Length: 434
View 1 (cartoon, rainbow, N blue to C red):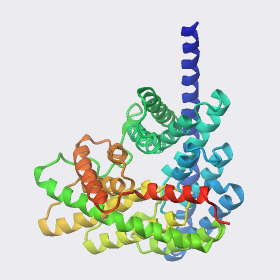
View 2 (view 1 turned 120 degrees about the vertical axis):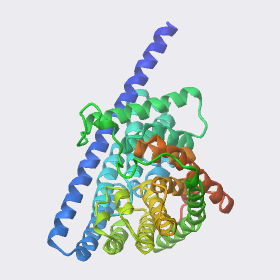
View 3 (view 1 turned 180 degrees about the horizontal axis):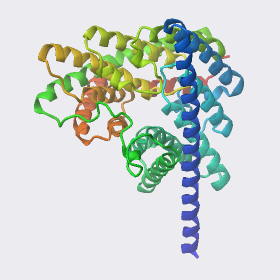
View 4 (view 1 turned 45 degrees about the vertical axis):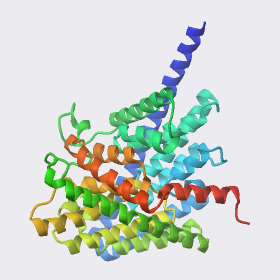
């Protein structure tokens, strides 16, 4: 009898994981279609209207639509989504429902499609958690809600980046902390299933049909040479710079966030202003950065002077800081990767000018270093950056750089950006303003 009960429990778990995985995959697929359609409209407008006018105009309109969806559709769909999931996991009465998933999908797709420097991973985490929470309630009751929210969030991250190991690391490092062996196994199963379903629903172009899904998301310059001893000092320098810059950058975001919160502007009023400013900044960059769905590593590789690289770093960094501070509906992991790669591009152009040769792994290493320094999640940063390239040769450079960045950042500030935002949200939720 006990064996039959265990079999029923196992079958129920397998069903739940596949429901979560397939539904998250469908949500991510719809999310990509929406974003691609809006980016296509943006590019079409730029072919008819001068670029310095088109980018701010699209940002203004996109911010207005995204803000209206959040304000009148579902206020819980604001921000990256990670803090909201963490609050719900702590038992606070934040909705994790189909409505949240739908509004988040629509609002963040509009924001990204109109050029906001936010990523798809934050929304996919909240969408995954909402879908998992609803599925768990309907199939298994409320007994395992916290675990369902955690594995749904990791499944969403894994699905959007095709990165099951990064998703597992995110669940264990950010959502659950240290879990039991059984919990770890369930987390691994959820992220792999979600990634598999996403692969089945998507059809990347190019490559043999049996192998195309194994190709890296960022093809260039992920095919780098193996790590050389001469590269280590440069990689360690890049990691130290990322750690040093991450702390004042984090303080800038938090200070700007508090100032904007003091304005008490609703989303439909604040986000158009952010979109306008981001569009004006984007018009200063080369056209290679116009597609907001790409991480633009190839465009960064094409920069030839330290002045160009510094300009990209300032514009990308300012855009991310403004979007995160305004609670734009999108993730901050992807823009952090881009800011880190932009810093690496600046280092690369300087090293190239001085030594006439720079390590080919700098962009991926810098992306991981900034992500690690901002989030203090070493495994997530390392595995996510590695899985974007699918290049084993990059694992050591990424690891050296990311760990150095965390070591430096930890000496300057004890808490990560996400931890500080969570503490502030808990204080606001526990002691709401009159």
